Length: 465
Ligand code: ARG
Image (cartoon, protein in one colour):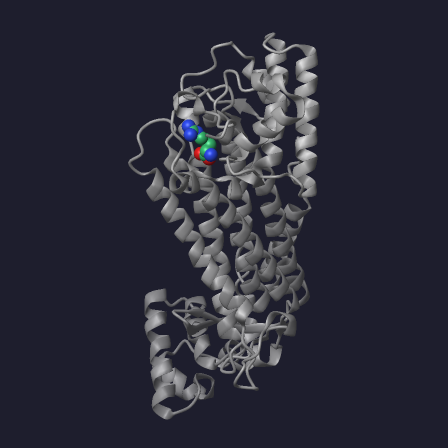
């Protein structure tokens, strides 16, 4: 039997190799080595305060843990067969390095409060990294939007031509979603930054450890108030996974739009060479693989969320080993989301917009709503105006011409309110410029959006305390 198992005392026989393999989480949770060491050092100092460690022992533990950290950093930490998880591995190595004092470190602590503390520390810094990626992408979009204000394109609903809009307005629609994602991330950070350490296995800490100063030392905002709740709480992971799924949906939507817009049928945009791939068979192909990967992975993020929620469902109170799966969900989601955020940023930055193609996709029937608005401005109630504009569309269809080619006489047959000034309606820019109210596609409104997002981006990130 391995002598460094943390729980080997009451067992006479060795663990079955197949269980040992299934139980082992070190290959994944070694990513928490730094957080585990940070938590242990702070815990050792808290033990010193309540005299469960001497000054010398505390110093030996902290110095030893620093050596362990360097070993991980340099990639020379030797993982042994019996290293079940990162907590076991670090403690085993510490004992090899400093001997007896290492065996006192775990007093009053359990891997149950240790693991969730490590994860919260990891999440805290990595959520900030994700936020930087999000902001980077938003600033690329805002930059494009401010330089491509004059490009007009069809806006679609149901993927049918609806109303003319500015390309910048379209682009910014994605930036606003991502900004909301960033705001939501701030909320998750708040929920995450509550320290569970000092909850023990489930009942609490029997040595009256000073949890508040421990939390302050680890830069947590607060401490959990119920040890049984604290060791089982993975809501911050569930929230993160759900959040990542929503970001995935947003990126997938943008990717899907751009896949359509980059097709020969549209040609609104050309994806940069560095973000497209070719076909091994058809030499003419330029495939938007980057965008397809974003779209696909965007969906698989929800798979992680769904599968972890299913793990949580029906668990009894406090810690259960099912929870060990939380790391896989957390790391996979983080890695996948990071890579699609990077690729989205690169793709959006390098794509070329083709203003001519965008404009030539505009067609006069897209101004039918404007005909109704023209009549409304002449005092016709909207429902009636909508009906009359419908008649204009039908008359043009019947005659086989564009609505703008109907003569004033023909229009007057439909409504007496039509006058020569209807000519001004047959202009896409005029159509776009009507939408001056906040949130619309007029130039002034788009400029306001750009200004708002720029000032939001300029705000300093909540720094690591
Ligand atoms: N590796 C474990 C996990 O990630 C640590 C907690 C183990 N606790 C226990 N009671 N077996 O969940």
